[in-house]
Image (cartoon, rainbow, N blue to C red; front, side, top):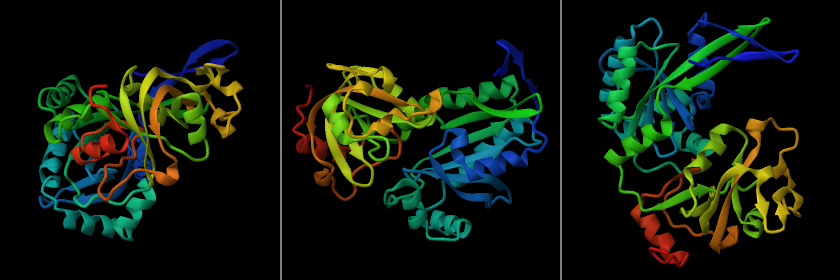
Length: 349
Protein backbone atom coordinates (compact mmCIF):
# COMPACT_ATOMS: atom_id res chain seq x y z
CA UNK A 1 0.00 0.00 0.00
CA UNK A 2 1.43 3.36 -1.04
CA UNK A 3 1.55 6.14 1.56
CA UNK A 4 2.13 9.83 0.86
CA UNK A 5 3.19 12.52 3.32
CA UNK A 6 3.37 16.28 3.08
CA UNK A 7 6.36 17.97 4.74
CA UNK A 8 5.40 21.06 6.73
CA UNK A 9 7.60 22.87 9.26
CA UNK A 10 9.91 19.88 9.43
CA UNK A 11 7.08 17.48 10.24
CA UNK A 12 5.34 14.80 8.22
CA UNK A 13 1.59 15.06 7.68
CA UNK A 14 -0.11 12.08 6.02
CA UNK A 15 -2.19 12.76 2.95
CA UNK A 16 -5.60 11.14 2.87
CA UNK A 17 -6.11 8.40 0.28
CA UNK A 18 -9.46 8.57 -1.46
CA UNK A 19 -11.24 7.08 -4.41
CA UNK A 20 -11.11 8.83 -7.77
CA UNK A 21 -14.51 10.45 -8.30
CA UNK A 22 -14.54 9.72 -12.03
CA UNK A 23 -12.66 6.66 -13.33
CA UNK A 24 -13.15 7.86 -16.90
CA UNK A 25 -10.46 10.42 -16.12
CA UNK A 26 -7.91 7.60 -15.90
CA UNK A 27 -8.84 6.41 -19.37
CA UNK A 28 -8.46 9.98 -20.66
CA UNK A 29 -5.08 10.42 -18.96
CA UNK A 30 -3.67 7.11 -20.18
CA UNK A 31 -4.94 7.73 -23.70
CA UNK A 32 -3.06 11.04 -23.71
CA UNK A 33 0.08 9.67 -22.04
CA UNK A 34 0.65 5.87 -21.76
CA UNK A 35 3.89 6.50 -19.84
CA UNK A 36 1.67 7.03 -16.78
CA UNK A 37 1.57 3.24 -16.74
CA UNK A 38 5.29 2.88 -17.41
CA UNK A 39 4.58 2.09 -21.06
CA UNK A 40 6.72 3.23 -23.97
CA UNK A 41 3.81 2.80 -26.35
CA UNK A 42 1.34 4.57 -28.60
CA UNK A 43 -2.44 4.25 -28.27
CA UNK A 44 -3.99 2.84 -31.44
CA UNK A 45 -7.58 2.42 -30.28
CA UNK A 46 -10.13 3.35 -27.65
CA UNK A 47 -13.31 1.39 -26.99
CA UNK A 48 -12.16 -1.08 -29.63
CA UNK A 49 -15.02 -3.40 -30.67
CA UNK A 50 -14.30 -7.12 -30.57
CA UNK A 51 -16.07 -9.87 -32.48
CA UNK A 52 -17.82 -10.84 -29.24
CA UNK A 53 -19.79 -7.61 -28.86
CA UNK A 54 -17.46 -6.24 -26.16
CA UNK A 55 -15.21 -3.16 -26.21
CA UNK A 56 -11.56 -2.92 -25.13
CA UNK A 57 -10.97 0.29 -23.18
CA UNK A 58 -7.58 1.07 -24.75
CA UNK A 59 -5.36 -0.76 -27.22
CA UNK A 60 -1.71 0.23 -27.51
CA UNK A 61 1.32 -0.75 -29.59
CA UNK A 62 4.93 -0.87 -28.45
CA UNK A 63 8.12 -0.35 -30.45
CA UNK A 64 8.26 -4.03 -31.46
CA UNK A 65 4.77 -3.92 -32.96
CA UNK A 66 3.36 -5.88 -30.03
CA UNK A 67 -0.13 -5.00 -28.81
CA UNK A 68 -1.07 -4.05 -25.25
CA UNK A 69 -4.60 -4.46 -23.90
CA UNK A 70 -5.35 -1.82 -21.24
CA UNK A 71 -8.54 -2.44 -19.32
CA UNK A 72 -9.96 -0.40 -16.43
CA UNK A 73 -11.70 -2.24 -13.63
CA UNK A 74 -14.51 0.33 -13.40
CA UNK A 75 -17.58 -1.14 -11.69
CA UNK A 76 -16.76 -4.77 -12.42
CA UNK A 77 -15.79 -7.21 -9.71
CA UNK A 78 -12.08 -8.08 -9.57
CA UNK A 79 -12.66 -11.58 -10.90
CA UNK A 80 -14.84 -10.25 -13.71
CA UNK A 81 -12.09 -7.91 -14.90
CA UNK A 82 -9.46 -10.68 -14.89
CA UNK A 83 -11.74 -12.92 -16.93
CA UNK A 84 -12.62 -10.04 -19.27
CA UNK A 85 -9.03 -9.12 -20.08
CA UNK A 86 -8.19 -12.76 -20.80
CA UNK A 87 -11.19 -12.93 -23.15
CA UNK A 88 -9.98 -9.79 -24.92
CA UNK A 89 -6.51 -11.29 -25.27
CA UNK A 90 -7.97 -14.40 -26.90
CA UNK A 91 -9.43 -12.11 -29.55
CA UNK A 92 -6.49 -9.74 -29.95
CA UNK A 93 -4.10 -12.62 -30.67
CA UNK A 94 -6.10 -13.39 -33.85
CA UNK A 95 -5.63 -9.92 -35.37
CA UNK A 96 -3.55 -9.99 -38.52
CA UNK A 97 -1.15 -7.23 -39.54
CA UNK A 98 -3.63 -5.77 -42.08
CA UNK A 99 -6.38 -5.82 -39.44
CA UNK A 100 -4.15 -3.95 -36.99
CA UNK A 101 -3.44 -1.34 -39.66
CA UNK A 102 -7.15 -0.93 -40.41
CA UNK A 103 -8.16 -0.41 -36.78
CA UNK A 104 -5.20 1.79 -35.89
CA UNK A 105 -5.57 4.12 -38.87
CA UNK A 106 -9.28 4.52 -38.22
CA UNK A 107 -8.46 5.69 -34.67
CA UNK A 108 -5.38 7.76 -35.53
CA UNK A 109 -6.81 9.46 -38.58
CA UNK A 110 -3.46 9.11 -40.32
CA UNK A 111 -1.16 6.43 -41.71
CA UNK A 112 0.13 4.06 -39.05
CA UNK A 113 3.63 3.99 -40.54
CA UNK A 114 3.85 7.76 -40.16
CA UNK A 115 2.53 7.82 -36.59
CA UNK A 116 4.84 4.94 -35.62
CA UNK A 117 7.93 6.71 -36.94
CA UNK A 118 6.96 9.96 -35.22
CA UNK A 119 6.56 8.11 -31.92
CA UNK A 120 9.49 5.70 -32.00
CA UNK A 121 11.88 7.18 -34.59
CA UNK A 122 12.01 3.83 -36.39
CA UNK A 123 10.35 2.10 -39.31
CA UNK A 124 7.37 0.00 -38.33
CA UNK A 125 8.06 -3.77 -38.17
CA UNK A 126 6.78 -5.78 -41.12
CA UNK A 127 4.81 -8.07 -38.84
CA UNK A 128 2.57 -6.60 -36.18
CA UNK A 129 1.02 -8.33 -33.17
CA UNK A 130 3.71 -11.00 -32.90
CA UNK A 131 3.19 -10.67 -29.13
CA UNK A 132 0.53 -9.16 -26.90
CA UNK A 133 0.26 -8.23 -23.24
CA UNK A 134 -2.47 -7.30 -20.76
CA UNK A 135 -2.59 -4.53 -18.18
CA UNK A 136 -5.46 -4.18 -15.72
CA UNK A 137 -5.86 -0.69 -14.22
CA UNK A 138 -7.60 -0.52 -10.85
CA UNK A 139 -7.78 1.35 -7.57
CA UNK A 140 -7.61 -1.98 -5.75
CA UNK A 141 -7.77 -5.71 -6.36
CA UNK A 142 -8.90 -8.39 -3.93
CA UNK A 143 -6.46 -10.99 -2.64
CA UNK A 144 -7.88 -13.83 -4.75
CA UNK A 145 -7.60 -11.83 -7.97
CA UNK A 146 -4.05 -10.82 -7.09
CA UNK A 147 -3.18 -14.49 -6.71
CA UNK A 148 -4.74 -15.27 -10.09
CA UNK A 149 -2.70 -12.56 -11.86
CA UNK A 150 0.48 -13.69 -10.09
CA UNK A 151 -0.21 -17.32 -11.04
CA UNK A 152 -0.83 -16.54 -14.71
CA UNK A 153 2.37 -14.50 -14.94
CA UNK A 154 4.75 -16.48 -12.74
CA UNK A 155 3.63 -20.04 -13.55
CA UNK A 156 2.39 -19.73 -17.12
CA UNK A 157 4.48 -16.82 -18.41
CA UNK A 158 1.52 -14.72 -19.52
CA UNK A 159 2.28 -11.04 -20.01
CA UNK A 160 -0.32 -9.82 -17.52
CA UNK A 161 0.01 -7.22 -14.76
CA UNK A 162 -2.05 -4.79 -12.71
CA UNK A 163 -1.44 -1.06 -12.30
CA UNK A 164 -2.95 0.69 -9.29
CA UNK A 165 -3.94 4.35 -9.40
CA UNK A 166 -3.98 6.03 -5.99
CA UNK A 167 -5.33 9.52 -5.31
CA UNK A 168 -4.20 11.44 -2.23
CA UNK A 169 -5.44 14.77 -0.89
CA UNK A 170 -4.00 17.25 1.60
CA UNK A 171 -4.52 20.99 2.08
CA UNK A 172 -6.70 21.22 -0.99
CA UNK A 173 -4.07 19.62 -3.27
CA UNK A 174 -4.35 16.24 -4.98
CA UNK A 175 -1.63 13.80 -6.01
CA UNK A 176 -1.82 10.76 -8.26
CA UNK A 177 0.55 7.81 -7.79
CA UNK A 178 0.87 4.50 -9.62
CA UNK A 179 2.00 1.13 -8.27
CA UNK A 180 2.25 -2.28 -9.89
CA UNK A 181 1.30 -5.70 -8.59
CA UNK A 182 4.32 -7.32 -10.28
CA UNK A 183 7.65 -6.00 -11.51
CA UNK A 184 6.91 -5.17 -15.15
CA UNK A 185 10.43 -5.99 -16.33
CA UNK A 186 10.12 -9.48 -14.83
CA UNK A 187 6.68 -9.92 -16.41
CA UNK A 188 8.12 -9.06 -19.82
CA UNK A 189 11.11 -11.35 -19.30
CA UNK A 190 8.93 -14.34 -18.39
CA UNK A 191 6.64 -13.82 -21.37
CA UNK A 192 9.58 -13.31 -23.75
CA UNK A 193 10.98 -16.71 -22.82
CA UNK A 194 7.82 -18.30 -24.23
CA UNK A 195 7.70 -16.53 -27.58
CA UNK A 196 11.11 -15.13 -28.40
CA UNK A 197 14.47 -16.48 -29.43
CA UNK A 198 17.02 -17.33 -26.71
CA UNK A 199 19.08 -14.46 -25.36
CA UNK A 200 22.41 -14.00 -27.11
CA UNK A 201 24.20 -12.88 -23.94
CA UNK A 202 24.58 -9.32 -25.27
CA UNK A 203 22.52 -6.27 -24.39
CA UNK A 204 21.14 -3.50 -26.59
CA UNK A 205 21.66 -0.02 -25.08
CA UNK A 206 20.23 3.15 -26.58
CA UNK A 207 22.88 5.88 -26.35
CA UNK A 208 20.24 8.63 -26.49
CA UNK A 209 22.53 11.10 -28.25
CA UNK A 210 21.21 14.63 -28.53
CA UNK A 211 20.33 17.46 -26.23
CA UNK A 212 21.82 16.02 -23.02
CA UNK A 213 24.41 13.53 -24.24
CA UNK A 214 27.56 13.59 -26.37
CA UNK A 215 29.13 10.49 -27.90
CA UNK A 216 32.54 12.15 -27.56
CA UNK A 217 31.99 12.53 -23.80
CA UNK A 218 30.87 8.92 -23.45
CA UNK A 219 33.93 7.62 -25.28
CA UNK A 220 36.41 9.94 -23.57
CA UNK A 221 35.22 9.31 -20.02
CA UNK A 222 33.99 5.73 -20.30
CA UNK A 223 30.26 5.77 -19.62
CA UNK A 224 26.80 5.57 -21.09
CA UNK A 225 23.84 7.38 -19.55
CA UNK A 226 20.11 8.01 -19.44
CA UNK A 227 17.89 10.46 -17.60
CA UNK A 228 14.88 12.71 -17.68
CA UNK A 229 12.82 10.47 -15.42
CA UNK A 230 12.84 7.12 -13.66
CA UNK A 231 11.01 5.59 -16.62
CA UNK A 232 14.27 5.98 -18.57
CA UNK A 233 17.05 5.81 -15.99
CA UNK A 234 15.66 2.74 -14.20
CA UNK A 235 16.43 0.60 -17.25
CA UNK A 236 20.16 1.05 -16.61
CA UNK A 237 19.75 -1.04 -13.46
CA UNK A 238 19.58 -4.12 -15.70
CA UNK A 239 23.31 -3.79 -16.45
CA UNK A 240 25.82 -5.50 -14.18
CA UNK A 241 29.61 -5.40 -14.11
CA UNK A 242 30.99 -7.47 -16.97
CA UNK A 243 27.86 -7.33 -19.10
CA UNK A 244 28.63 -6.77 -22.77
CA UNK A 245 26.46 -4.58 -24.96
CA UNK A 246 26.15 -2.78 -28.27
CA UNK A 247 25.33 0.93 -28.19
CA UNK A 248 22.71 2.20 -30.60
CA UNK A 249 22.16 5.67 -32.04
CA UNK A 250 18.41 6.06 -32.51
CA UNK A 251 17.34 6.13 -36.14
CA UNK A 252 20.92 5.69 -37.29
CA UNK A 253 22.62 2.44 -36.29
CA UNK A 254 25.06 0.77 -33.92
CA UNK A 255 28.04 2.87 -32.86
CA UNK A 256 29.86 1.00 -30.11
CA UNK A 257 30.65 -2.25 -28.33
CA UNK A 258 31.66 -2.28 -24.69
CA UNK A 259 31.53 -3.97 -21.31
CA UNK A 260 30.16 -2.59 -18.05
CA UNK A 261 32.80 -1.65 -15.46
CA UNK A 262 30.53 0.05 -12.93
CA UNK A 263 26.82 -0.24 -12.20
CA UNK A 264 24.50 2.75 -12.44
CA UNK A 265 25.03 5.82 -10.24
CA UNK A 266 23.79 9.41 -10.47
CA UNK A 267 25.95 11.08 -13.11
CA UNK A 268 27.05 13.76 -10.64
CA UNK A 269 28.61 10.94 -8.56
CA UNK A 270 30.31 9.23 -11.50
CA UNK A 271 34.10 9.45 -11.33
CA UNK A 272 36.70 9.30 -14.08
CA UNK A 273 40.46 8.65 -13.66
CA UNK A 274 40.83 12.44 -13.43
CA UNK A 275 38.05 13.02 -10.91
CA UNK A 276 34.28 13.61 -10.96
CA UNK A 277 32.68 13.53 -14.40
CA UNK A 278 31.01 16.90 -13.93
CA UNK A 279 34.40 18.51 -13.18
CA UNK A 280 35.79 17.45 -16.57
CA UNK A 281 35.63 19.45 -19.81
CA UNK A 282 32.40 18.28 -21.40
CA UNK A 283 31.30 18.57 -25.00
CA UNK A 284 27.69 18.53 -23.80
CA UNK A 285 27.39 20.25 -20.42
CA UNK A 286 23.62 19.90 -20.40
CA UNK A 287 24.13 16.37 -19.10
CA UNK A 288 24.26 18.09 -15.69
CA UNK A 289 20.57 19.04 -16.07
CA UNK A 290 20.81 22.12 -13.82
CA UNK A 291 17.71 22.73 -11.74
CA UNK A 292 16.21 19.32 -12.49
CA UNK A 293 14.45 17.38 -9.74
CA UNK A 294 16.42 14.39 -8.38
CA UNK A 295 14.24 11.89 -10.21
CA UNK A 296 14.85 13.77 -13.49
CA UNK A 297 18.65 13.69 -13.11
CA UNK A 298 21.06 11.89 -15.43
CA UNK A 299 22.41 8.48 -14.39
CA UNK A 300 25.56 6.84 -15.73
CA UNK A 301 27.02 3.35 -16.12
CA UNK A 302 30.79 2.85 -16.38
CA UNK A 303 32.00 1.33 -19.66
CA UNK A 304 35.16 -0.12 -21.13
CA UNK A 305 34.68 0.70 -24.81
CA UNK A 306 36.19 -2.06 -26.93
CA UNK A 307 35.31 -0.58 -30.31
CA UNK A 308 33.47 2.58 -31.34
CA UNK A 309 32.65 4.32 -34.60
CA UNK A 310 31.52 7.82 -35.45
CA UNK A 311 27.71 8.06 -35.77
CA UNK A 312 28.21 9.02 -39.41
CA UNK A 313 29.60 5.48 -39.91
CA UNK A 314 27.02 3.65 -37.78
CA UNK A 315 26.68 -0.06 -38.44
CA UNK A 316 23.29 -1.09 -39.79
CA UNK A 317 21.46 -3.22 -42.31
CA UNK A 318 17.85 -3.42 -43.42
CA UNK A 319 15.90 -5.31 -40.80
CA UNK A 320 18.47 -4.89 -38.02
CA UNK A 321 17.01 -4.98 -34.52
CA UNK A 322 16.17 -1.61 -32.99
CA UNK A 323 14.12 -0.72 -29.93
CA UNK A 324 12.96 2.35 -28.03
CA UNK A 325 13.89 0.85 -24.65
CA UNK A 326 17.04 2.20 -23.03
CA UNK A 327 18.22 -1.34 -22.28
CA UNK A 328 16.98 -4.71 -23.50
CA UNK A 329 18.38 -8.13 -24.31
CA UNK A 330 19.56 -8.75 -27.87
CA UNK A 331 17.84 -11.84 -29.24
CA UNK A 332 17.73 -11.29 -33.01
CA UNK A 333 20.25 -13.78 -34.39
CA UNK A 334 20.89 -11.93 -37.65
CA UNK A 335 21.61 -8.67 -35.81
CA UNK A 336 23.91 -10.36 -33.29
CA UNK A 337 25.92 -12.13 -36.01
CA UNK A 338 26.23 -8.86 -37.94
CA UNK A 339 27.42 -6.90 -34.89
CA UNK A 340 29.90 -9.54 -33.81
CA UNK A 341 31.50 -9.37 -37.25
CA UNK A 342 31.37 -5.57 -37.59
CA UNK A 343 32.76 -4.86 -34.11
CA UNK A 344 35.37 -7.66 -34.14
CA UNK A 345 33.86 -9.31 -31.09
CA UNK A 346 35.56 -12.43 -29.78
CA UNK A 347 32.88 -14.75 -28.44
CA UNK A 348 33.53 -15.73 -24.85
CA UNK A 349 35.83 -12.73 -24.29
